Image (cartoon, rainbow, N blue to C red; front, side, top):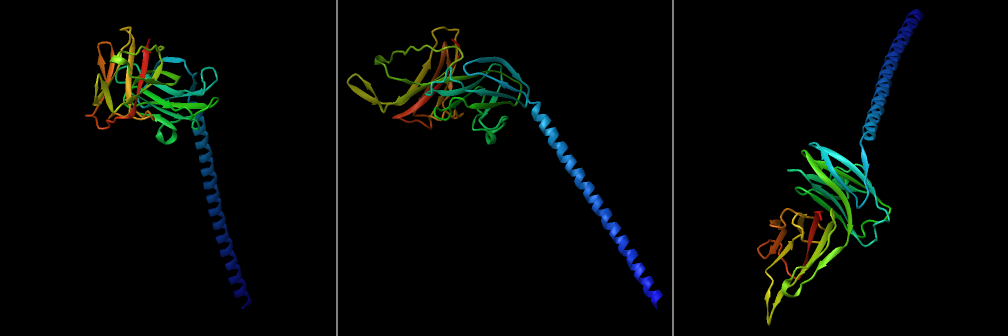
Amino acid sequence: MKRVEDGALKGQQRRTRRTGARIMKMLQIVMMSFVLLMATDVAGRAVAAAAEATVDVKTINEMQTYTGIKQGPESYKYYQMKLGPRYFTGTQNMIFKVLATAFASDPDVYISRKNKYPTSSKDAEWYCVREGSESCVLHRGEFTEGETFYVGVHCVRDCEYTLRVWLGNIIDLTENVGFERTLMSFAADSTQILRYYIPAAIAERKASRKTESVVVKVEPEDRYSEVDAYLSLDSNFYIIEEAPASHLMANGVAIKFGKADESWCVQCYIYVIVNVRKA
């Protein structure tokens, strides 16, 4: 009887040892898988860090022009700029200009103070994605001296552009007697923001008539000067495709805004952004 019990006990011990061995083997496999997973994760992060380290971020300066920049289709270029005291007075708006210089070029602009590589409206504080050239306006009060701005430029197809960061104040346009032209002097590669208050009525001799349209013309004195102009219907300067477009004239551009336009208003401000390519 004792032999039978000893045999049963030994058999149970052997089964226990085999079960324990299987469990240990399974634990070893799990541990090996975990170690392999950790190694893969570390390698993945190392590759991501290496890829990030290879992205070139070009340092640019405000009020300096960078020409002949080219990008391929579905590509990004990144820039950074620290706002210094040399040109900034504390009262200006800041305009990030990316002006297309080749046919069908369509660069989009994303600006951030936190993200070094902004690529969309989701990871940028300011962005401009209209068709063609871009003029991204940052309002005074939204930024201060010493801040660093990171800029991402995205091109869906081959594009070429000129890049410049401009600091400037809003210029108010006023009515002149007889509607004479107002002469202004703008520097090459500058961006000017013009503001005009549309009156409810226009005085004409002894009477007045309701304002039904406004025409803003930008006519350089030098016929070889290059300018373009865009209308913004509010002070946010988000230039939308539905806004009245500019029209080329023999020497310059013109924008007409009238009661036939959906957003027509009187006793309100309109803004015209003028880019001077050549003075």
